[in-house]
Length: 466
Image 1 (tube, rainbow, N blue to C red):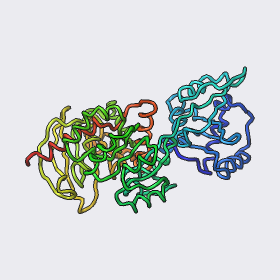
Image 2 (cartoon, rainbow, N blue to C red):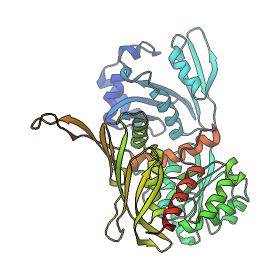
Image 3 (cartoon, helix red, strand yellow):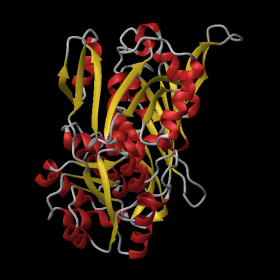
């Protein structure tokens, strides 16, 4: 997790900055007393809002910092340090790249590095910096500025604009994610309810529009975010094909019509224009790490599992099925157990026994959203157990120990609970993936192909008889 520094981060920054293994590569190596540093830190980053300091943390521990300090009008110099125990693991690139993304890719950013500091030179070269000038002691690097992409949000509803507000710790809306990312400029909202668009614009900035056509007549639009009801996605995506877009973010599901989803999947336009379908669990840091552990075999072979959801198989159940696929757990066939209508008459919530390609069973259970909201997954492996709780916000890991009372028996015990970063990072990470897919041609984590795949499964399950 990368976050803006707080005043109480002063000591962490001081300890890292003057660690002997780091200080040896600094331009100024004289150690400053903490009390003096603390006064400087608070004045530098909290009295002057133009300077920025970001902190990278892994679980509960701080890993490093990245400072961007103004020297002259609109000229910033970056200073970055990673704790010695975390060096060589890629954290430097993550921290540098995301700090600049949050700060603004259109800024004049420089870095001064000792000629002898080869590892830092490689770090900056790898992250879009090039040599600006140098002498016998110091190399000055300059960031290759990128233009901000103009983004408009179609759909000024809760997920588009109103679940949070600027400055909130958690990023719950598309508006918050795009305005938090230095690579985008939010230029407006489109909504048939013009008052909604106006309200959203007052909170997040940009202009309000009643229809997509007027937006494109009045603005240069690079990216559009589709955050409208499920049954409107197809219509809006068809309209967007008429314009020279650089990318699209669309709420899941891709459409609510399997024929249209299949058609979109074959459409050459969407094979050229990057589109992120917001299956947000794929962008949750804790679940990304869990995927690596599962596929890497940490928990052994998958045996069986259980999942609970409500509010429509396509609307919400597809999240669960998509996450299973993300973990490498693929459905071979299924037996329908029950169907309930708790959301949309055209999108029933389905309970089914899933037979998996690698062997094993998964019991998918629909719980009516009229009672309460639930989204949980329980995965049983040969070497442990993993529970995903609270809508993907938490993970509980179980390990195996010998039973002290009954010799020869082994049992599962809860070993740790992990916050996944779902609320404060998933939406931002999806936006960042879209930006890098456009600018750097990165692979899209939640693609049209994946969305079509899970839609086909949902369609088959809803059409099947009990």
